[in-house]
Image (cartoon, rainbow, N blue to C red; front, side, top):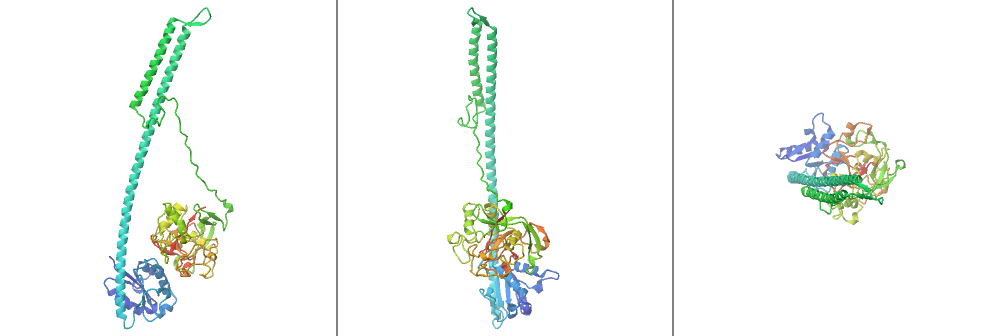
Length: 544
């Protein structure tokens, strides 16, 4: 089992004190501390290396001083990134530990966490308390890994069981198909034999009738009255003929009974016509008509066009065309800005609500969210009071299943989401370039302290009329995350769908917990697709 990884976040002015802390932690035989000067090698990408180190850490110690708190620069970006990452952790997890190197003001976002005063006369006691917190975090990590192993084992067991059930169902289906095929073949054989027997009987009767007519013509004589009278031998022949016909009928009946005894039909006598029947009655097959939806003519579609989905959801039309994707002034994973052409598509006007998702669950096509609460409401999902609020605690797989099997579409790609959010004029936010106004434009930065009803902030809608694309809840998109994907993709691309594989999926739009910076339309955030959090929801898209 690897030791716990501890990332030391600090300002450059505090390096001597942080180096002392790094050496003390390194001397412990069960801790693996990470310090940029000790870990980053020449030639490595600074931002990517630090971001990966924070991602891989079990604990982030944020070293605070008057310089680091008041200084603008990369240390603030590290703190913000680590803080956002902490939102993915379970509520009881120790992940961020503020550590004051001197008497200074703790940033607002960190005030809810108990900090360590690593200075003055109580410095040694503070270090001992820090080690105790790291040990507790290590125990939490070991427990979480054990639970994850059990979960994976359970998934493997369920996969084996599902495979067994599918194999049994397949065998039963093949057996039923074989029995049905055998029954059809037996019936066809029986019908062919019956038809052959009937044909033989008809031909024999026709030959006898022709032979009788021939002998009647040969044996005719004229009487004085002009009538034709058969000879005595002719009358005798007719008598023999009638006896022959009767005997032949008995023989044919015997042949039919013998055929039935040797090759009995599979179905009961009430299922098929009797062997003596001369005609078969066919049952007409009536095909149930499939209802179709009248398509909206393409020529009638424009910005602002709406459509009602099969389950009552409202979709907004986004026309085909180019737009500029990304931001040169944002994070490195938003660069470079590049031209993207997208085919026309539809996107949900609102985030998927509890009521909409519940309909899919009731139909047996979706799974329940991981939790039925929200951040502040213990009774959220399934409570009619919150029917029109965004569904929460749904991981990527559950969101994707809803869009595919219920809504008849997909999660939007990153490109589709960004175009629907900002339009074609490179605006910073859905409404334009003005800074957010939490009273009118959006629910963000703990304005309300939880998710709000969808569509509550009409002033913040996008150029196409899509609501809540900044704030309220983060939204899953279809793409895997790759930090340098834009650079690899190049300029002037059509309908990009993201990397072919990856370890995380992309989130867009920020949440009620986010800052102004994170709700920009170009901001990209990553998270494991198995995570189900109280700040994540989704909406669906589909092709015309």
